[in-house]
Image (cartoon, rainbow, N blue to C red):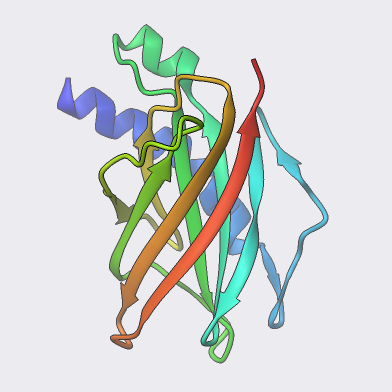
Amino acid sequence: MKKMTLMLLAFLALPMVAFASDCCDGNTMKMDSMQMAGKEVMLGHQEISGVRAMAHLKDVRQAMSEAGMTTTHHFMVMLHDQATDVNLDQGSVAVKVTLPSGEQLPAAKLMGMQGHFGADVTLATPGEYTFTVGSVLVDGQKRVFTFKTVLPE
């Protein structure tokens, strides 16, 4: 089961890896596509202390259900060093999800995946979700990025 989950995660990350490798034109991220292949939505971008974060949420409910799992989405964040024009995938990154009810889930560690960080999350009810991404990258600086989205019924 663990091997199947890892293979599924690798498969789901492929569109983001392709996007991440082609996302930047100099130091300016392309933001011309609000929705990508399938049910993947861009949550926005923020820049803090020279690092630009761009977050995406992919609906993986069907694939996970077929594998007997209850996970509904794959959360991804690409961290881009504006000075060196390089996508970062090393360091410690986690996301805390605030549910529509206001309850905050425990932090989920994001795994570095070839130019971005990602983890599976369960977003079971419609409403507004807040994703608070905390990071300590190789420069040792702490950064906190916040993204929101509303999931329809």
